[in-house]
Image (cartoon, rainbow, N blue to C red; front, side, top):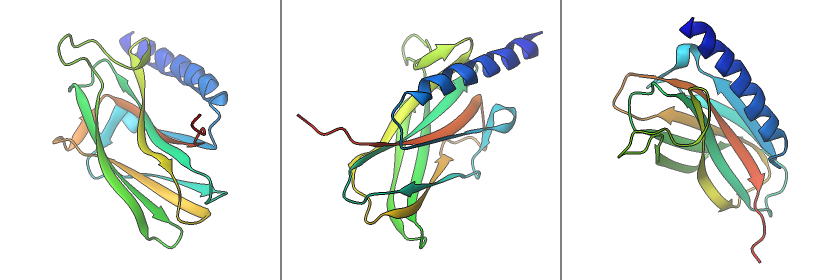
Length: 163
């Protein structure tokens, strides 16, 4: 019964988050579901996308969905951005709280026991040239197999000019 509820929650959550993304103004958005809600430490989620204009600045971020049973209060994610020639153009690591450290309440947008988080990686970023790029994401906790992560993805948007 609990498995049926989790499946229905995932389906409904995917539909709602998918509809929300339609109006997001994203230049590129992609999500990968993780098998059995598990993200192995050595598993790299790679997303390829096209940058049409190098003179435009962009917001590049990742998003993930976790379950209420995620075992920690935060997640650490390493990222590597490469161009079409395989040259590394940016790297980094982000630590993101998924639960309130004091109360244990889930953070992010939630539906059922799934919660979505959007994490900025590069803001007002200008790519060195137009063309194809790849962004690799890797969980960097101390767990070989991180349970409770339903999906991971990226979003690329044009930066909004400051007023």
